[in-house]
Length: 233
Ligand SMILES: Nc1ncnc2c1ncn2[C@@H]1O[C@H](COP(=O)(O)OP(=O)(O)OP(=O)(O)O)[C@@H](O)[C@H]1O
Image (cartoon, rainbow, N blue to C red; front, side, top):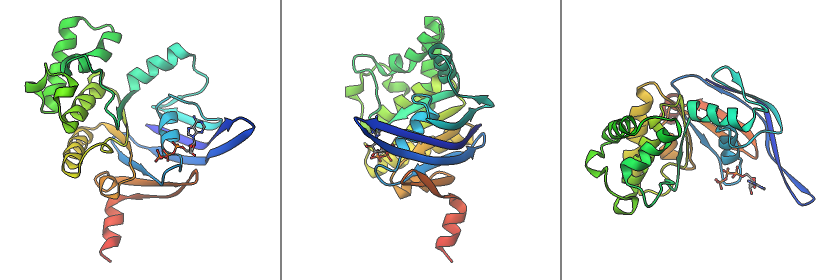
């Protein structure tokens, strides 16, 4: 589903250049649930932004569902992004003056769906995340966990092949974080490929594979089952 080879990325600030990704190689098969871990500044968000086609690498290759992502014009890139990728953010990024159902339905408007179809689909995804009764509420009437559920429903509504989540539990308390991760696991079990950036070990251990970044390189990449088995040796 995802294949990246020898990816490099630097940021230029004035006369300085900061080499953030220094030759990243990894692939993610369809249906995987992967977390990307690493300390602050290790390049996690930079990598996720490139995977999300929100930014481009300086060199290396990125192939998404067999399609090389490079030098696509903005229109084609946007179409690919909408078709293949769904995004979940730490701060939910809901539109404050729109109800839960309208937030979920909004991306479907840009896909050209008619109002009734948008609303039916948005309600179906709200039901999936357990928020049918909250459809008409505004974001500020919802708890953090509920807001993230709305954001997950919105990400799913356009039926992307891959979900990319940047610290999806970063703004939530522990109990709510686990509930959101339970939902993410359920969505993954239905076959959706999911990548999560997190700096929390217990959250990463609720995925199936942990990729560890340090100073712009992958220092280890292991299945969670194997990590857990080793903890008991
Ligand atoms: N647009 C930018 N311009 C300049 N430097 C940047 C830019 N974005 C990120 N950086 C720098 O690149 C490095 C990696 O940032 P990145 O956000 O990818 O790290 P991270 O692992 O996600 O960190 P955190 O856990 O704190 O979010 C940091 O030193 C950061 O300051």
